[in-house]
Image (cartoon, rainbow, N blue to C red; front, side):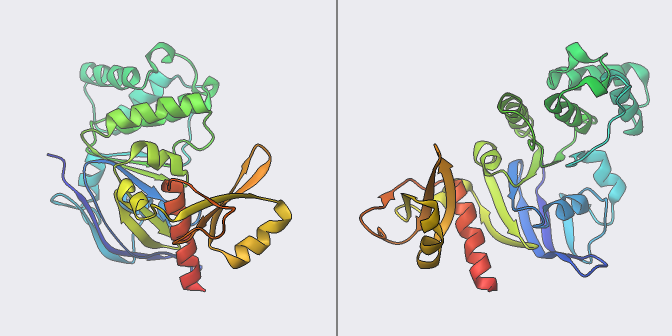
Amino acid sequence: MTPELIIDHVTKTYPNGVQALKGVSLRIPAGMFGLLGPNGAGKSTLMRTIATLQEPDGGSITFGDIDVLKQKDAVRRTLGYLPQEFGLYPKVSALELLDHFAVLKGIADRRPRAEIVESVLRRTNLWDVRKRRLGTFSGGMKQRFGIAQALLGSPRLMIVDEPTAGLDPAERLRFHNMLSEIGENVVVILSTHIVEDVSDLCSRMAIIASGRVLLSGDPQSAIDTLRGRIWKKFVQREQLSAYERDLAVISTHLVAGRTAVHVMAPSRPDPSFEEVPADLEDVYFSTLRAADRKAA
């Protein structure tokens, strides 16, 4: 049985005075867990800390009986990590570089290593292009290669940081399907600012901003709390500032060149608004807005 990852009051302040994490606490079970937040929220700092790449100032992290902050080698043996940016050698083939990574993971024997490398290449649908140079790969293929190297050693804990940024819709769908399969039996933390990734993939989630956890739980329960409270209207662009001043506008969208506003209110703001079903994007933006108002 895959253990829970337990993060307890983790803090981190950088030398320049930026407080990246302010007492972050989370319980993350097996399956896909979405860590959702804007750029600069502290997501990557938390991911690097879990991945043993940097030390926090305080708090604790455990994964089953492993103390993540003290038993770094034990963590690395069970961890698969796809950072937001990772370097590839453009003139090396996928097969060669993955074999090299497998050696670094401690898979020394040639025959089992070849079997493991073949397995992850097939699992990520890269077997047919295994001899191609990585410099010729598309963005989506490079991301799948990143997952292939993260799968070496059959990790029980995987971290993927902003994995679908820049992917076209077809590659994003393929990547989602692959992550869903991986997340059936291990803890997979998906760190992203893309709401749809969490909505499509994750049974549990947290929203983080300015180094604090603002909300955690399952996405559907969070959506249910907004039922009957989200209202939509198309407005002229020059009217937008007035609506933002007078109502709780949580998001704006361009729809066929027209500006649609989503407003959170207990009842219809006026007859020109229509009620719309809440979704995770409404949860996300209303949570961030509430945090901004509290900070102000």
